Length: 579
Ligand code: VG1
Ligand code: CO
Image 1 (cartoon, helix red, strand yellow):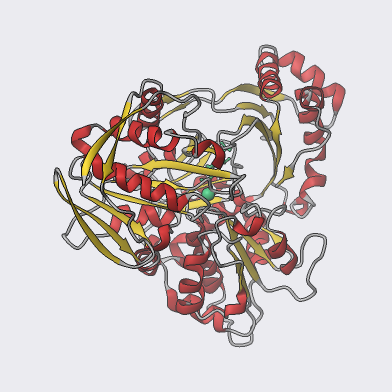
Image 2 (cartoon, helix red, strand yellow):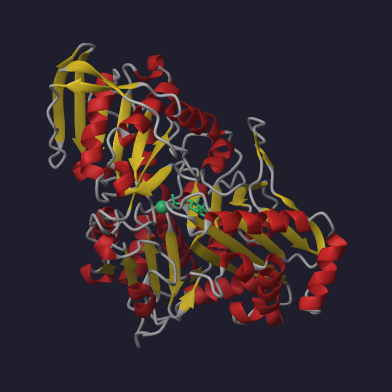
């Protein structure tokens, strides 16, 4: 092939958000749109680093992925990349990409230098829905802000990009290496099995034998819902082939370009089928299994459910941290530290304190955990948004979280799988609350509200912070049973490893009794604005940890909505999603 220079010009709005660039497919398919972003990324990495490198390109398989992969292959070849690695059919979960970058060795002994991940995560897919792209670095984690800012700057000045002319489309449906020759010598595309590197990594972390016994025992039952996302490419291999679960325990595990028309977000609103199967929601099954879990489109998120019981993600990471050392071989020599994103509840803080672990609070988005992990400061981390993970890779990991829970269940039940009483998911959570107290927690999302109105609401909340005594007078007028606000600010983070500062990471109201209200604008939407309101209240008294969380939080919710003038600004009387 030869290298063709294509003249181009900047296209507005290519600023990567919390997790890459996410837009409607129709935006991505405009002439030059994807090309500009990819070339801007190569330019941000610098030509020397791109030449001769190995690049992973794959994603959750959503609509437009296959076209995008062919375009990126041609651009990579033209920019001097030596090898492009593609998961079979273009499928790799986000955590599997991270694992492949960190672990896989190519036929010629090479390792990957970075990856383009093609996903819009939990956003719906299809011709009228979302597509997305993000770049991950050689450590397997999302590009830091220094790089994403540079990519964005490049998109504003781009004049040209490069394409390999004469390079045919590569068959990505069959495994094998295709070789081509270009001006820089040989260029190859290596199509490999999407699951094997990831499965191998999981087997090096967990005790598969103990989980197998759990799944085989008559007291236990299991189900997993991939919501037609890429987790389906792993679920059969891990849960059925390795752990012995039945085929019928897998729901929606065939990856689809449009996720079967659904919204692949594992929460109580969108994972309806699983929720019913677990005996919850509007049409509860009468005989639910003991354990159920779901993943999002790119399989980095997880929702864990027990029989008729929901585990909040903030509790999940705290419970995993509290039990990791005895239940998971990878952690047997101890945890280096733990971390959570700012809006995530303080359940993890209490565990860190009691186990005397290093603890970090970072802004929303996984990229902030990576630096801590690279520096050996953090083993387990999580976000309230159904993201949980560890330093085995540099992304959150939905299947890892399920295996962590199965490991904890297997450990707690190791002596009673032959007829004893099963220690259930609900038991584990309630025992945790009894020991550490409970953080009642809920998140209200107002999706696709007018962007101007959302900004005004946020500005209003910042302005209020100037006088706490006025805020407290207002609050007492709304609910006299809510504590006083002790401090209020906009969260700012200084990375303890590289000293970089991230400002404006969410508006916080911190109450005297440990309760918190946090307001943020989402950075992953593709249209309008999404306001997220996070509400949390700590209850230490073990006789009061069994309440319904919406009841327990009702006073704080009322304060949050009135203080922020939510309805006045947004015109919404209720959130789109409550988790
Ligand atoms: C959301 C979540 C955040 C998560 C991010 C990416 O971001 O709140 O916790 O890291 O999605 O997750 P935002 O800016 O919309 O609140 V995923 O599964 O989309 O890669
Ligand atoms: Co995701």
